Amino acid sequence: MKILITGGCGFLGSNLANEVIAKNKGELIVLDNLYRRGSEKNLKWLKSNGKFKFYDLDIRIKNKIEKVIREIRPDVIFHLAGQVAMTTSIASPQFDFEVNALGTFNILDSVRRLSPRSIIVYSSTNKVYGDLEWVKYKELSNKYVASAYPMGFPENIPLNFSSPYGCSKGAADQYMLDFARIYGLNTVVFRHSSIYGGRQFSTYDQGWIGWFCQKAIETKKGIIKKPFTISGDGKQVRDVLYADDLITLYFSAVKKINKIKGNAFNIGGGVNNSLSLLELFEILEQELGCKLVYRKENWRVSDQKVFVADITKYRNMTGWYPKVDKNEGIRRTLVWLGY
Image (spheres, rainbow, N blue to C red):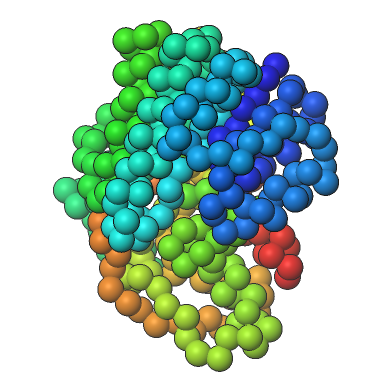
């Protein structure tokens, strides 16, 4: 089996690529332009683990994407390449559009014409639902609760492409589904909540679990001399999914593609693995035995007070569910970061 991973040197991509190498799941082809922080380190790490074909390539360049698809005719494409930061999308909306919307279209159209049997599993986002301000929230001492959705948000809540990032990812999301409807392609869309784990080189605006784990370690070691900052009041809630569960998720999609193709799924750790930023700080303070000192800043544009994925649809169709709970995942992340 030929497995092509776009964005294969990113957090999710490198984890999936390493799984292919370690478990000998097939012939691996990695495509990445090494734009993201840490991607070169992940490429070096992957090369130390085994052999694969690497393309230093930008998905915005259609003729080069076509050449790769024509040459390889992959059985599976994990399409993970993308611009993933809300703040970057607002500062550079054209770049965001070209990577997420145009780049995804280039892959889809190349597959449609040159390799129509390929399976494409696409990494989308919960931001296709917008800021969810129509939801009524209950404010507790350390988190917000969406009482009307005790199991999380299902896939039938209204789409609302708010922010350039939401628009670009939403457009790609819908093209994936429409190419399954119109052209019969084997596509599936995962609308991810928060994902985290090893090989994630988090930044201030992307990868919040890893970022604040790093801030906690720096606090414990005395490296931080002044309060770090958070956006909003810290009561915003997400469900979190650890890297190991992501790996099993993506390969389960390949096995079940005939059953799930043409569908979009809300994917995260589920309600049992949801937590607010303040709850994360409580866990980190207990794990590290230190007090985190932070300063609140304004809410980010189009932020969601709560997003917890209702994973019922995917679990019922495939049997997959998360097995690494949030406390264990956070402990593993701290270890990977060097604590």
